[in-house]
Length: 226
Image 1: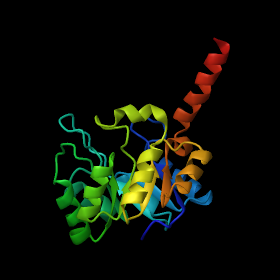
Image 2 (image 1 turned 120 degrees about the horizontal axis):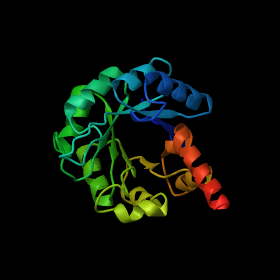
Image 3 (image 1 turned 30 degrees about the horizontal axis):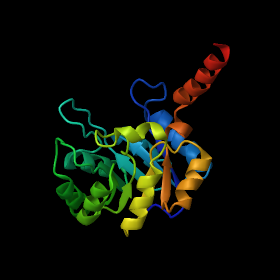
Image 4 (image 1 turned 90 degrees about the horizontal axis):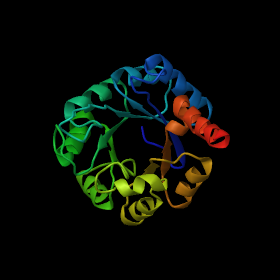
């Protein structure tokens, strides 16, 4: 199942310290996103993916976050992680396709195994054009700007909103669908992404994290009352 062109994909994720953590809340969030018109869901972990799969037919980009202090790559670093979320119901497997060290197969081998052994599409989270080209050459179905601003090479871009420059470069250089993800936190920015050629846009925190949304409003309150 593929992501339709022009789709808004809603990322339904909550870490363990978030009051909405867990499959009950994330499946409800996905249901709300679908009711609002989302055409895809991004979700993390076997339990959340299985719960979301049980209540929607929308395409699911599944990831498995595996934290290890020894390695910077934590988004589906290895084939075993990919196999588990595929079994849980993910249609598309999201992976960190940056050039950083990982505890798992090299990117090219991981993409090949996901496609050949699991029969799943691959959604490559990248931070640079070079990484995107490499992921495409290895067989990734989608490339996404997700990690721009979150790697040592690109950290300077993090405070400047979404990386629209990278988005445009990917669209110009690659024949595969390019997905805008990372700091697209207003409807105007989503519209701008489509204007610049995005196949789809993924939005997370701005829709599905009430705690962080509340913090933004509280900061405005504090500034006013200072």
